[in-house]
Image (cartoon, rainbow, N blue to C red; front, side, top):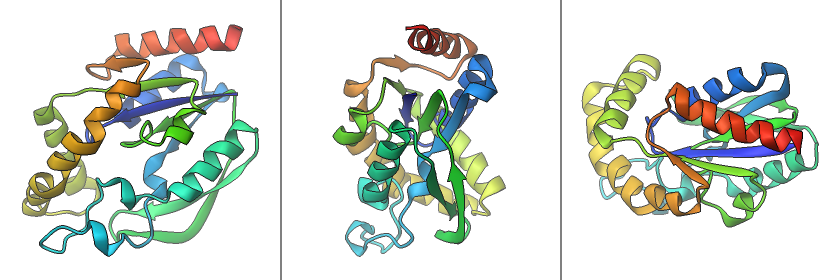
Length: 202
């Protein structure tokens, strides 16, 4: 069983890219695990902004203890119980989802390459480096249309937390990537898929 890490800033197209790769491999042979599921139920006060707003783009916004445990269990071939995070309430649901490993686990999230212990368990590490204007536009549409956010709140959050956190914590993950993708294109998906098939045939 192989775990593929796909990192990148918010709005870089990680989920879309993971699905493109999954379609090329074989849906029966792969599953997608989203790091969004591992947001803490309550974010620590220490990472709130000067205005008292939540900072979802800080490493401390995630449940690293649970995430490390789950990635380790998947690597062993064991099932895990994944929490469900609701972005409209900014909290976890009572519901949990049983997640079973497969030949390929596509692990996507803004900090999927951040933790050194998790990186050591990844077989391929990929970073999506997408221009900031594209990422911002995608995030704007997603948060307004899917998460019930106002236009003003999305813009304020971008300048208060998203942009500075990307520069400080997210972009440096590129140094750990086996390869960097400029956009989640079909060609890029073909390249990653080819490497995954090599792993499967080894």
